[in-house]
Length: 582
Image (cartoon, rainbow, N blue to C red; front, top):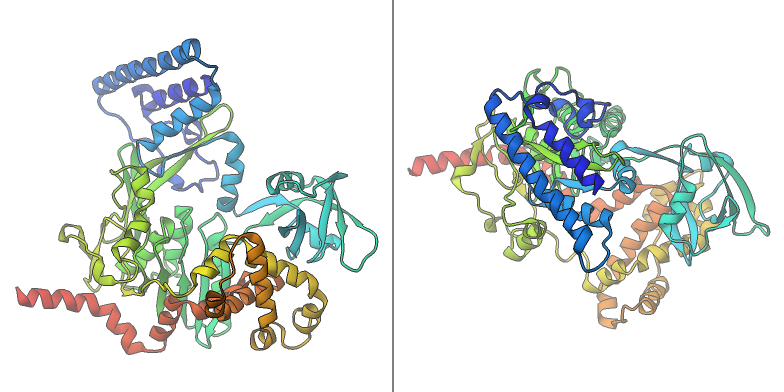
């Protein structure tokens, strides 16, 4: 109960007249790094009406008392003992859920974990692992990380941490034992294939980077490809480094893959979009909220890639910060958006660390608007459950497979800044070039095997059994490397039958017809996973994109300048045709 009282007291003071004017960001719990979801947008607007403020304060006090008395009565009279902490947490969650789907409460024990992907790093020993038969199996020792430095190798099995067995221990508990503050130590015991006695390694934990740039390579001799999974605190630096490398290799045009990118820090998206716009002062995004000062983010001069063909790949899971980049590129007619309509998240959250136990609110404080003036937030008045299943509803309506099924009202129509093309708000970014969802990419049988973890487990076991052969022939070979693997390696029919047998053991009934229909696709998917195990995600996506219709459409457009230009002007021509008919 103390937690919710302190929360309400803090929120009450935040919006009272005495606290409303020029509260320092530290009081609100804003990140001191100035690199939160919104950066410097979270300052409360000054309240000018004292009478209104006093009235609001009295109203808040009454609401506060009702909640306080309810909690007190539950504690005193409820038929059973209640877990106060749990019902308070549930009350806070319920309160926020009624506001919007993106305002959330994060308990203290979950805050650090939730921030890892956004911070772009964590402190630990630096291994990628998978649990194999109740034992931690090292997939990769991160290059330059603490484990690699002391000699931990792919294929090693870690069986102890600080003299405590971690065999059969839940993965979350293992992570707690292996992770820890930078500079602290952990002793691990390792079983290595071909070595009789277990090996002991003393490891000093260090900062381990989490890479949001999952792949960066030359798609063609003149086209660079960069795939970004989210917008963390280090994304822009990773992106700019990758773009510079690819430009040095001859990239004149770029494909930026934001498919599945759920967003992150606004300032990272701003800095990325800035690299594509040529003129200082071009608006990238602006934000407005009832209790925050409006903020206008503009381009600076001298971006990394202001000329040349640019294509942004998007899908129904492209959201938030990724939509800011897509919206800026589309609204300034800087390049083409290719794929499917994006998620539609136009709300901005601010982390508020106002709890005494350091639990956190991520509270929606503003809406963001693209340069044309559109807010792309989709409706959420139907409740959180309906909001969350919107993607399923889109699929059922045929929107993921047919562009003709997608309709926007004219009231949500806006126009791009240079070519005056029609674009729409109110429900994501509609791509310039629609690419339907490939519903035949994976068979039902293959999907069941994947969902049961059969593929990952098999590839881990396969790489363990064949590690020496794979290393000598591909990974550590003086010539060939991944190129040789790409050209030569193929899982045999016998290998695929082993996968099917493993699936049957896991509960996926063998279906000979489905197996024959799935074999080719299964073999290719297993090859992608093996490439990731032997190298990294870069090699995984080199194989992945060859089966991705959205990527293949982008390559087609890159190689046909007339078609690229036609799509860039297409909606303008359609608008002119409509005007002529009128």
